[in-house]
Each structure stands twice: as C-alpha cells, then as structure tokens.
Length: 224
Image (cartoon, rainbow, N blue to C red; front, side, top):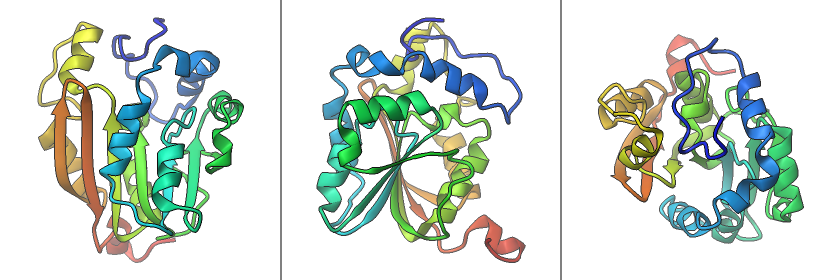
C-alpha cells in the first residue's frame, strides 16, 4: 500500500463496522506522518480560523491524528477554553504526544461514532480527513451532532480538494462521491446538520455546517 494515503486508490468496501483496517493503515504510518506532509500546517490553521471559535469555547478535533490542528484550536479558544483530540489509532496519539501537542489538548483514544462525551457538551467540531474513513458516515455525523450544542459548528476539512485527490489516486469523481456537494448536503441534513458553506479547490476542501435545533434521535423519543 502506498505511503501517501492521498495518492492511494480507494480501498475496497469491507464490513462497515470494521475499524481494524483503519487502525492498521494509520498505525504503521504514524511515526513519520508529519514528515510526509510538512506543508499542511498552514492549511490546517487557515481551516480552523474559518470555524469561528470564541475564547472559552469547547472544541473537539475528531480524528485528530498527530494533532496538527490542536495548536490553532488552542489559540482560538484560549486558556479558558477546552480542546479535545480523539483518534481511533493509538500510534497516532503517541505521535501527537511525541510532537508535544498533548500540551494543547486532552487526547482520548475513542471511536468517533461512540464518543465518551455527554450530549450537547461541545461548541464545535473540527474534522480533517475524517469522513472518508468513517465505516458509517451517517452514524459518525449523527454522533458528532449529538455531542454539539444546537447552533454549534462543524468543519469537514481536507488539505486536497476532490479533483486533486482523485487525480493523485488515478480515478474519476462523480456525484456519487461521498464529498460531492449534493450527496454531502443530504447526508449532513439527515444527520442533524445544516451545511452553510462548501469549498472544493485543488488546495483545500472545506465544508462548514451548523448543528440544527432538532437532532435526528429527538424524533425517536429523546437522546441518551
């Protein structure tokens, strides 16, 4: 498998509840991850700036990896704010700690689809490269909506746009692509989010969304 996941062809669909392949894929690459992508930090910081965080906010970096978003997230919320970093892969969290980024956030080993957080406890979520690695994107997005307060914000980010990513992978993209605007808009709406901005350029993919007042689970008799 190629070293750069942004140039690797899409992996075959497997069992949707299998996280082991994600852990194996990122676990073997964690130690040298930042060295492979040394120019991404500015892009991360610029994307975090679009999230509109305020001093004192509580924000989650979902699928934080080696923690490249953690310093700008901490800068945005200040000392009174709270920054959480969640990742499924122990080696990624270890790499974040080795890089000293654990000083900016509380790092948690957890599944984004089953977060150890109470309902409506966050002001915002930043998620870089996450959605394509969720076994069930709708489940993951609903869980993110569960832990974000109504009116809270979500940023789905990738340092490459859809066309640039597809070109590196040697494939074509279409409206059935998970990150295509119509499909992603519908997925977000069904998961408790309202898309407010969609940006797909060669050097950046960034979608912003607002947590709707009613969560999908509310319609089924309450949120646990």
